[in-house]
Length: 233
Length: 220
Image 1 (spheres, each protein chain N blue to C red):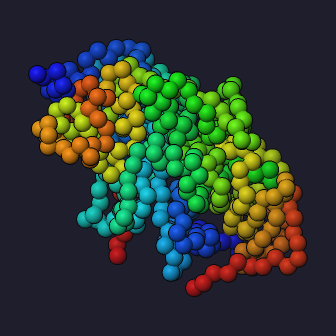
Image 2: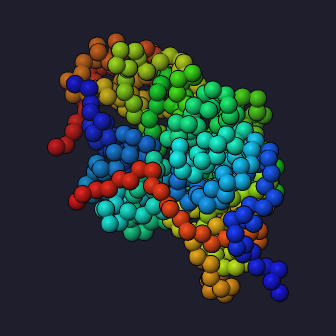
Image 3: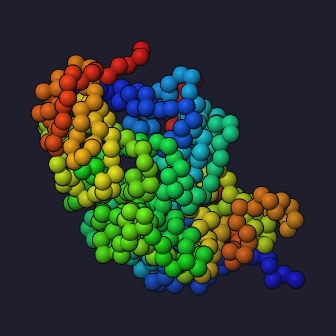
C-alpha cells in the first residue's frame, strides 16, 4: 500500500546512513537549485572525509561551501572553483583533492552513472590536462577521451514539486544537475518546495520519474542569490 | 585606441546572424547581448540550462531560480525553454549551437586556447569552456591582445594549461580581429586608430598581414 511513499519527515532521517568516507553527488549550479537543507544536515552531522561531486561548491557562506569550512570534504569533483575563495585556498594548499572536470563531462558522468553506462567518449578535454592518462580514440577523424561514469553512495538534490511517489518537477534553471545527480546515487534524497497527492501531477509534465527517488522531504528554502543583477529601465 | 569592453562587445555582436543560437561566455561576451544588430533575431543559450535568455530582470522580477552561467539573475524571453545540464551540453557537444563566444588568457597560432588556470596563482576551473570549444564549429575568442606590461597573449604556443586543442579559428582582441589558419594568425581588421605596426609588435605568434587592413566600423 505505502511501499511507494517516499516521504521522510525529518532531515536527520533523510540523511540517515551517511558515514565518513562516503561519496555524495549533489545537484545545483552556483547557489541555484541546491539542496540547501540537506547540506546543512550534513554539516550538523559532522560527517568527514567526504568525496563530493557537484558542478561547483557554492560560496564561502552558502551551499557546499559550508562543508569546506568545517573540513568535512576530502575530495571534490567539480567544473568550477571561481566564486569560492575558501575552495580555491584549500585546493591550492592541497588540503582537498580536486578533480576539475568539464561541466558537460560532469553532467554526462552523472547521467551515465544512473543509466548503466560505465564510460563514454567525449571530445571535451582532449589535448588538455583533463585528458592526461585517459584513453584516446579516434572516430571519423576526430579524437575523443574516455571518461568514466560517476556513482555515489548518496545523491542529494532539490526539485520544485513532487508527489509522494517522488515524481518530480523542477523549476527554471534550478533544474541544472539535479535530475542526473538523483539517478547516480545508491540512495537518492530529494528536497522539494511542495508535495502534492499522487495523481495531481500530469504524467506528461513530470521531469524525473519517482523510480529514481528514494527519500523525499519538504523543506523551506532561503534561495540565496550570488549575483543579484537588475536593470533600471 | 584600443577597444573598450563595450566596443569589443559591439564588434563581436556584428558577427551575429538572423536565426543563430548563440552561447555567450562570462564577461565581455555577455555584454554582446546589449548590441544585437537591429532587424535580426538570435536566441541566447546559457549552459546552465536556458535557450532564450533575456535581459537582467527589473527589481520586482528577480527570481532566484533564473540565473545565467555567470550566476547573475536573468529573465526568460517568450518562447524560451529550460532543461538539464546534460541536455544543455548535449546540444553544445552535438554542434547544435551556431556561435560560441568566450574569453581566454592566451591563444596560439595552432588554434589552441588557455583560459581556466594559471598554475600556482589562479584556479578558476574550466566550467563549460572545454565542452564548448570541443563541440562548436564557430567560435570567437574575445580577449585583450597583450598584458598591461605589453606581453603578448597571441602566442606561437600557449604557455598555460590548455582548455582546448586546435579549435580556435577567430580571435577578437582590443586591437584587432584575426583569423587562425595554417599555423598563423591572419590580420583581418584593426581597432580604429591602431596601426598595423603596433599589432605586429604585440603579436608573438606568426602573423600574416596582407594589403591594407581595414579599420573596424562601429555604427553609432
